[in-house]
Length: 73
Image 1: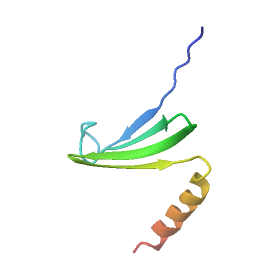
Image 2 (image 1 turned 30 degrees about the vertical axis):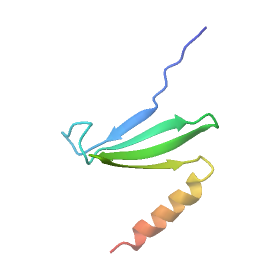
Image 3 (image 1 turned 90 degrees about the vertical axis):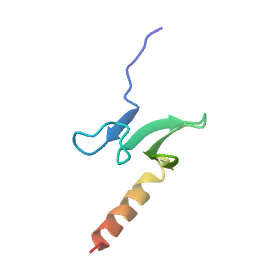
């Protein structure tokens, strides 16, 4: 049996912050047995938030987010 190394989680946080900082966001590859998807989560004490993104959804979601960011004042 051979093994491979995979990076499945990246944490984005303010510079110098702990990885458990409430401003930290975690981007990870996850699966529930029906194929891999990307999940973005933020641990905010008792209230955690998470979104899951399927690879097929990403192009339109990215385009929509970019459009909305451009509309911000």
